[in-house]
Length: 215
Image (cartoon, rainbow, N blue to C red; front, side, top):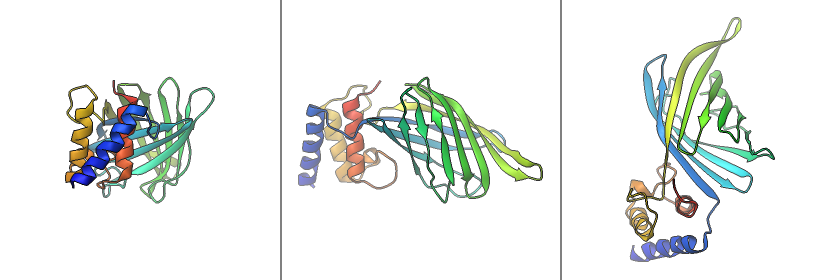
């Protein structure tokens, strides 16, 4: 265990010294609220930017679509010449297609088709800033005259600093040592993407958050 801890500390210390990581990492954590049915659950986003390419890990906890807790998904996009993030792709079986934009000014316009395998469309509209994310969502079902609103809700999330393990607002060697201890012991603090598995992705995500700094 000590050898593994020493290896992790060495890798992360090198990242901190030379600024090497898998791009800039930014994370938000909060809640979703279904205003139609009164249900709620957690939301967790981790975005990683590498040049113009962006990858977003999204975990929506709870009974989000009237069934079981949906699996986390990864949404990819590209930053265009105007600074807008253009999202595209699919993530079956949860979503048949994912499209939309997050503008350089932080305006969110995202459509999720085939949500949960039975809702034809979910619209997400909101704003994203360096400190928080606020959005509304509308879930549609198919009706005789076309799409009909099934449920409406909102998401509220605050930016979190993944690398600030001790929560004192300062990134330093203490955070690296605490992260290494958490990783070796299998602690929740080491699971950067909250997927329940500790691996190299978590170490790289921590490094990206550490070298990118926190607000």
